[in-house]
Length: 305
Image 1 (cartoon, rainbow, N blue to C red):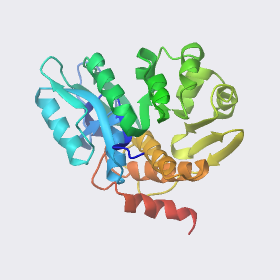
Image 2 (cartoon, rainbow, N blue to C red; image 1 turned 120 degrees about the horizontal axis):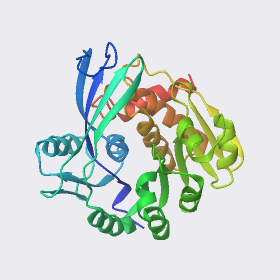
Image 3 (cartoon, rainbow, N blue to C red; image 1 turned 120 degrees about the vertical axis):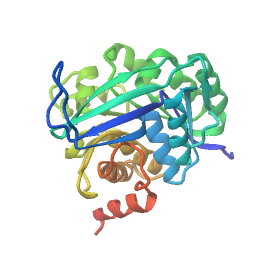
Image 4 (cartoon, helix red, strand yellow; image 1 turned 180 degrees about the vertical axis):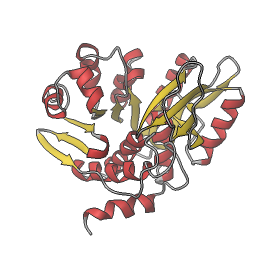
């Protein structure tokens, strides 16, 4: 069967204002200085969709962007990455989500205005695209609201889900969703929140009751791959000096998905994901002209050199 899309990613689209190198957190009534800043497209769906397009896949985004100035800027930024925007609508009835990432002492805090989404329209566009897609990439938050994962699975698509942070997520409401998921991505904090356990290994032991293949991202310590009873610790790969972390986890997912769609073994997918995430920390935000297939391959080849 010939597919129109390799990947369809669904989720919120955000304009990210990234402040890098703050001297300290701002206190009420005081102003603090950052060393640098950048404006970038953001959110997990956008970062994954854009990254996969830059890796050469036919990658489409399902989202809603407002007809406002932030929306115009965001639309142009995403379109320049090569992502298919035919499933994105601009509506005068919606504002655009804007998020500020505040970098301080190697970590980040976030302040976000979440705009309303055209949920009904996005669901319809997603359902229409599924028969044309090899893989659907989703956020857990969206799957908790509507049966996106079940719809994707019923269509025959491979389904990947990234947990992100969702305060409402727990085993009781996540377990049914995982029945429709082929690969689940999370990090150690999110895994502990949803599944319990006081370590990635303990969380993984509980997760294994609900899904056969998952990844726990460990930041600068690499990642933890569980695949049908086999556990592999994937080391981080050095792509150069780290300047900012926003989007690194999303680009890990993109690298993994790239391998998955090329039929690679899961461990190779995870190592390519590690290379992709390693490249992500060398620039601001989750999408950048410096992110290319040749660059990710160059970092990945550290494994065999």
